Figure 1: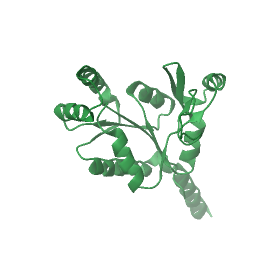
Figure 2: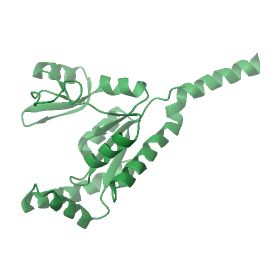
Figure 3: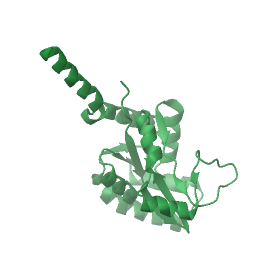
Amino acid sequence: MKTRGSLIVLSGFAGVGKGTVLKSLFETREGYAYSVSATTRSPRPGEVDGVHYFFVTKDRFEEMIRGEELLEYANYVGNYYGTPRSYVEEKLEEGFDVILEIEVQGALNIKKKVPDAVLIYMLPPGAKVLYDRLKGRGTETDEVIAKRMKRAMEEAKRVPEYDYIVINEDVDRCAARLHTLIRAQRLRTRSNMPFLEKLQADLKEVTEG
């Protein structure tokens, strides 16, 4: 019997390596779907509707907000971005574990709407490692790095609100640990209710004749 997938919400400090770990996970394991966001911004060269984003008009997006068709949404630099509930539900029913990479506030909002969602926070092995990774990018000024470190200090206070943490000391090991953690969710009682209900019915039939 097919087990319903889990909605996995992954957060982490800027520079912790979320994107790199997820790339490793998707390349080496099967059964995952990355949540595709809806947006009102125009497609960039090479972007495909339904693959990179669902590109919609502002009117349509606001209609989705009113109809509670989104798990979460935000307005960034004049454009809306949000997570369509229908796409996530479809993939979960197909048995995929759906991963949504999002910041803390959005993650906690999703948990309110989807109590079964599993919240995972990715952490660096230490503050110095995080600083070195941000510095090693070579794309940000010292001022921006300082702001990101300060933001990390604030976000660390919210980590206890998550279900699990994973430490990214090595990309492949972290991806393997993440995979094990996600797949373990399939053993939860609430993830196997169809099987349990069928077993209960069969037990009744066998016992009572």
